[in-house]
Length: 283
Image (cartoon, rainbow, N blue to C red):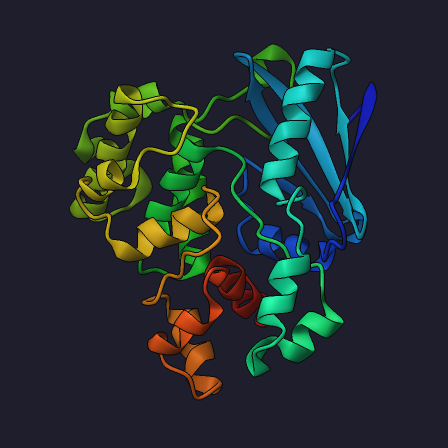
């Protein structure tokens, strides 16, 4: 990507860029992202103030450097805000590490990897859609569903001269207008999951599309239950104390440590970071 500007976003303390890169790798979607693991860099397009902007985010132990095709300072400010949220760069990990590090399951990991932060989705609507597509399926299946969604309903920028193969995530208004049966056929979903996708899009048209809807409103959507709500609280919201207790990976990690769900109460009020550290042990 030809860059006209660089934006430096420093982390507030240590940053385990390897953990963040592993999360990005596990969730990279063809047609939406391009990952360069050798440079710890992800390229994609972001819609900012109504316009698409290509960005490459390169991670390092001190934070992130963003390469962008625009020199507009208002766009730079929004990119900086998103990157800070995306990679949890503003959080002071000192009290979190002190608390979690006092528990045997995390003591060694905190000592060796003090910079494990939450890697979030870059936008709420995209977060909910991709989480719904990933319910009760493998990461590989979730990526396939997401790639089909982007291919069928995303914005192809080739006509505007952008020929790198990356487009924009589908808009909420476009997905809200697609009949459930068309969604099912295009993405390869069950009828129930296609209904959830449709209802999520409709919900976002009724709320502030730039914000994660309230938990109660998300819970009212067909097919969204406690796992999805807690997962989104971690990877799309700012709740430091959510824990998706039914998550298959987390259950396996707890069992390996001879712990049960009740034991996670000892990690309050930082269970979101405990979950992130457990996930990071496998990525």
